[in-house]
Image 1 (cartoon, one colour):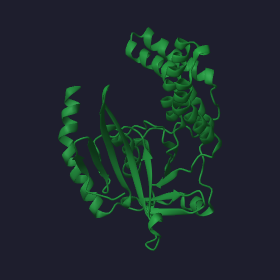
Image 2: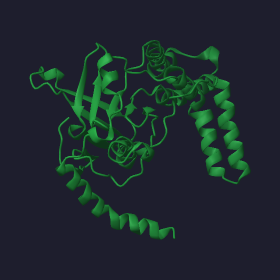
Image 3: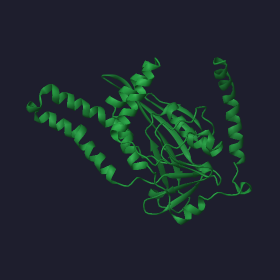
Image 4: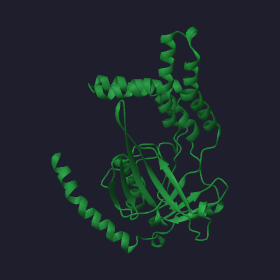
Length: 317
């Protein structure tokens, strides 16, 4: 991934937002929309791209559609075309899901705010230590038009450059991709990382997995979401109640949450001796500081955002 000056470039069916470097504020609120924060403390932030729950919630509606078709056609009259479609759209994804569940969870990328460095681990035991201010970030959104109208898909890509200048071409770059939709959603996700490094731990959401010692069953998650729907309905918030019902019945959220917790409670840790030493806290006087270039870029960006933030706050007063 190549770096570019932060800003937006709009094409006929695409929108690309270059977010870093330099890692200046996006103007969005940090939101961990994909549960990417696996571990957070005063020294480092662990970010993971393992999202088995999202995989389940994409697959679940397709399975429901085929079950409805089988019920409507009659199970005894299902033909070859039905089973071919089922294997293509459900069978192979289900086999892929089983394979993913049997594999170990990939290690997270660790952002050390005291050293202002990033540790990028690999399955073979190698790891890179990359300067924070060299990390690249880009939000990409693509539009497609079909029979059912326009749909938008996008992702956040966070890239890292191998600190070894003599590394082979295929080992010079590594990137994390988050399927969060691009645009403002990707900016909110990037802000979780950027705000932690530039503002502090309290500026980003809590970790959803670290410290958990109990896991809900599939039925437990189902009852929890449906109970939340009943509470919202009792308060008169029918929109929120409908959202919980849709997530529970039609998007398979209980199964997604259950499998996500089974794999990420507790989240995997970086156990290499060198990384553990690198992850220890430093005395405040030894903390790394922003470069003068980044300091200037952040100040300019904050000055640009100030009128917008003032205008937004005035609307609610």
